[in-house]
Length: 361
Image (cartoon, rainbow, N blue to C red; front, top):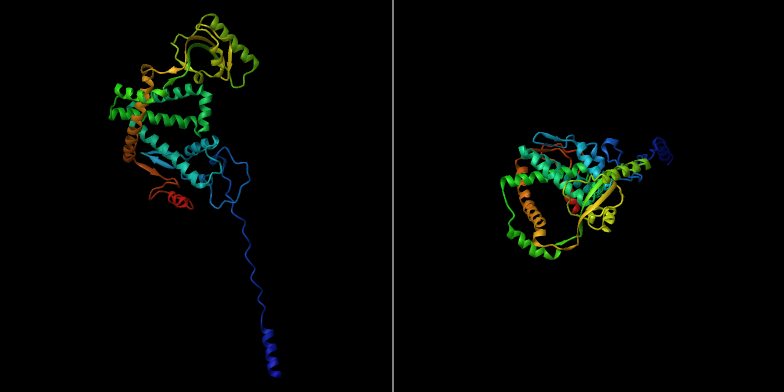
């Protein structure tokens, strides 16, 4: 018994107590790192960064390839694509911390628009000036309908568009129109217009409008009292000497003339002159040439508007057909993380469009 006890004591003495392994330190949750100022939207979220299981669209920007695409040898720079997205953020159409799926799709759409613009620009060739004239006319119509350039720019911002990107879109549309007319000439017949008039007669109401002659002096955004006084003096002097515009006036509605000028003209008789009118654009004085009450449009009055509509509807289909053809013939290399071809430059950790679709399902 003593021998067994001794052996037990020896064995216990030789045993080493192994301490339990120390658990590894708990890592702090990963938070998307802030990007350089030149790679992120100018409008930053004021909220504190939150834990992000996936990076947002903006956390990819610094790692996007530059250029993001090459179209027939012409590169599309990363900064230009980011500028389009910044406009959408500034207008509130896109949130600064938008989810990755929405953000990448917005980026893909913006890139497609730039690619299409380059493709069509190359195809237009010698007729570029004609298309540019059409784009300028379209922009001028929009400015008039918005009641001035400032209102127009504000409306673009609310749609998430910059002036540069919208003018690019108008130019691409005008170029496609020129190309369509070159390859597939078409006319709008009176029979088509008459059919359209009969179907839309009830809604073809012409709003009240006026024709005016106007003398105006522009003012800065925040003018001083001296600048206002000086502008008023210039306008008054020109009216007293009869320096009204010689160009024939056009019909302008309440929306096109603006609330201040419309209110001043509304109380006038034909050939009457308003007092000085102050608007956000400057100082004005107007002379009423003609007045037209709201009424149902006759076929002759609506013909021009109907022709523009019918022609636009034809263009929509033919433009789409032509653009698809031009795309198939163009050499386009895409290097973007959201839409790259085999052999392109996919980014490590970037989420592909296929994964987006799976998430939606």
